[in-house]
Image 1 (cartoon, rainbow, N blue to C red):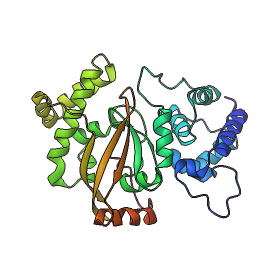
Image 2 (tube, rainbow, N blue to C red):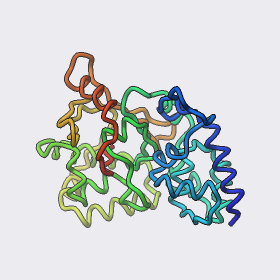
Image 3 (cartoon, one colour):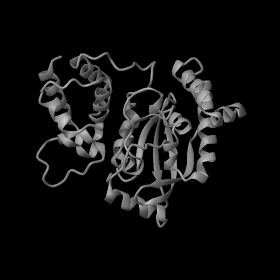
Image 4 (cartoon, one colour):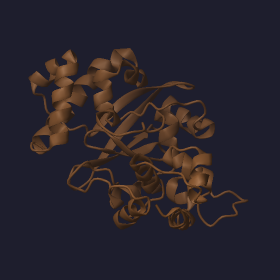
Length: 284
């Protein structure tokens, strides 16, 4: 592994990204042309010390998951992401025919411009790929690792803790909507092994999902009115919107509230309190 070249490449990409590109304020005393090291670490879900070791070439051995997170944080193109994996001597991230782990440029460009409302890019299996700072403040950071647990729909039916993001009385509604959405995705990707495995696992592990699946209700989740439980602000009522990529594999999801409503005031307060004391509890 070429630690020096990896370090130089990371620094060069960090210098290129403007704070505004990722929803961060420029600030009056910024001394670097792009992002600070601690900002890259925060965006990638890493500790500042660990990222500093990487950029100083001190022998850290980043995993494929860490490299994928850095590629998202630094807004790398497909060729740049592959180069990052080559420098770290890791197998390349899945190609476009596999899990859609590289954010599509059009959606990423829109996400970069949504700086005053929570927004994130997710896959059609509800795996979070990228978030702006307000989405992290509202929902928590995207979960680490790979596999079905990256999907909020999977966690919804297999991990009771995942449901804490919504009030209990809203759970039946979201269960129905998630299942109907997955029905549509499964039909469109009928030969996709990832989808087939997820559906089979959910039918096996969740009696609720199995019963809903047999109803065969189909409806892609385009808009919804949500009540989100925030650890500091309580229940926030928001409208949730989805913009689909051309192939339907990814969605830009953002939250809003009409001016003058309590939800609008809570979003403004959210931008002030930021990500204080929040865990990983991403909703999609």
